[in-house]
Length: 110
Image (tube, rainbow, N blue to C red; front, side, top):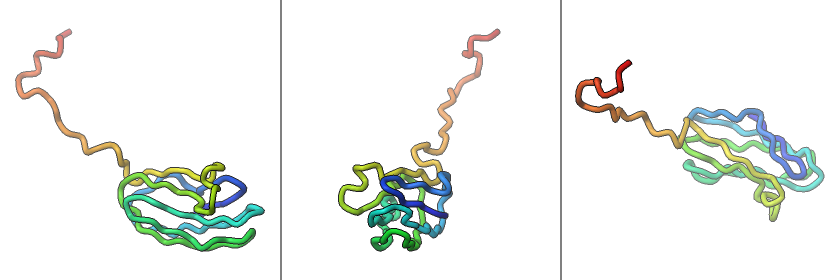
């Protein structure tokens, strides 16, 4: 899984995630220092600050939920270096069966 960091954008190599262990390889393809931080239900994990051309890996075990992925260098997230991912379909609770308990003749018929 790669995260390409440019001035001022984060491009992830994938957008769909199931719960589990991941290694995010962050590569600074920009002209300024950048870093990658992943914040959500699994806590906060980040790379070191990367000089242009440098890369680092952050390993995280993603739990179901929504995560913010951004550059924690001062002001960079506000300049567009942020995105969100959803792991395991968070926000969609397991389907409950609110079907009526009586006969199904209340569907209007044909």
